[in-house]
Image 1 (cartoon, helix red, strand yellow):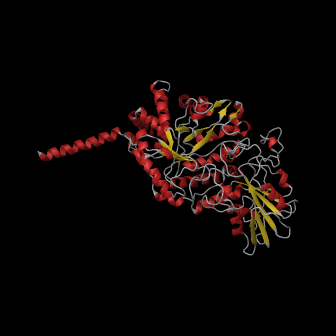
Image 2 (cartoon, one colour):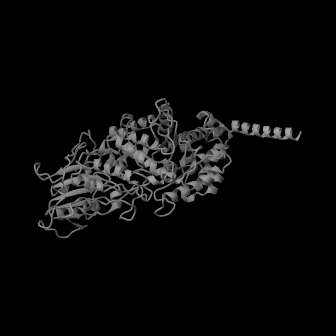
Length: 624
């Protein structure tokens, strides 16, 4: 009798486990995606659903906050790190602690962690910093950009993070804009071709996959984010977060096409733009976020706001936060990058739903989209990070790839005062050469904004890399004497065989980067005049956009646009000294004077200093 009782109890227990497994279909990876989403959704309370729609900054988060408010996503803003010079292990441990909090919630829904990895994993010490997009557009090389996306994904995953707020698909039409360096080109066709970074980040979409469904190919890939939807690069006077005034033909022929490509390539998320379109804030633009992106293009991933993006729907910002929550969610924003006052957001959205200002159907649509991405990327099966990928952070292969990208992004704008007397490539063997300028030995200037900190960091202590001056010393013949002086006062023609002068802009990012005059940093102009008037010189310009250079071009023997090359300055020396040839062609028009702006290829008043597509070439020199 006792044996039968034991067997009966075991059978009952087994049936209970089986029944539970049947009921918890969302935890079963063998179930269809739609079944898993539906099963989880029916179990969720309103509080749990709104938690999934909430993204908060790591600085205000804890495992307890994750558990108490059912937070669906975290992020690191620019410069938000576990500790200064944090290692991959520090990052992984931090992300996992937050994840443990999420997994301890009633339903155990894992959180997704996002970060601005816009030119490599740029917040992280020792990561490979690739050239900014303004330089990558010059290469016109989608395969290169795809490889950069794949390398970035590995480095992001090395720190336990699964979500990169990249790529920026802005078509920058006015270089006064402080985010122009995040744009690949003023030309929509170049920007479209560079959407190949998305399969680099996420993986190649399977041939049989429906258009618009998000795709992330496992733990070596990350969730990508096409941004900023839409027309952020067309604002009046290039003012950040300003109004873009444009007719439908201009919108759909210039600013929208890259989003078609992104959706086809399975991009998992799209970020709304701070800017307005013909007076309507994009965070509240129902017609485009829902009507066009979600319904017309059949985008099935989720729309995320920018940092406090919904707050800025009103003017002044934050003047009616309840309205901002309602307007953004109703327009089609699915996840809100709050990022700090999360109780206000949660409280307001809860009130709006309970009082029928936001229908439950809109909440369900948003949560369904968020869960779809989390299921597709395998987050439920493998939510915890480990150190198995730490080896990829700043690895040699990625630095070599970045060096290749630097070489291909350089544009030779002048080579010799006479066509038959080119200065470049420079001879490695010389008696004495001068290296000068504000940007010759400054890794922070070389990397630009969105590097370690939001606005960038001047100097050489921010991360690991090779400055241009160091690269030059690595490259020249051992017998060549290299003299480095940032700002030499008196230079005589007999002192040096030639000079390399490196000048440009200081680092900057959005808000602080807008410029009405587009000048290079002082004393850059006087350094050019002092040196190039007496010694054969090549001027290398480090900048996030074309800058005022016309007054000085005549004095120069050679001129190179190097944009914001990142940590691998050796790529600049590779081409200056002829190990590789110059191949880059301008992806932006180089103006003569700022009063010509905006001026883009095809405009009636087009009269550039160097036209779109311009770039001199050189051949590699063997045995130089």
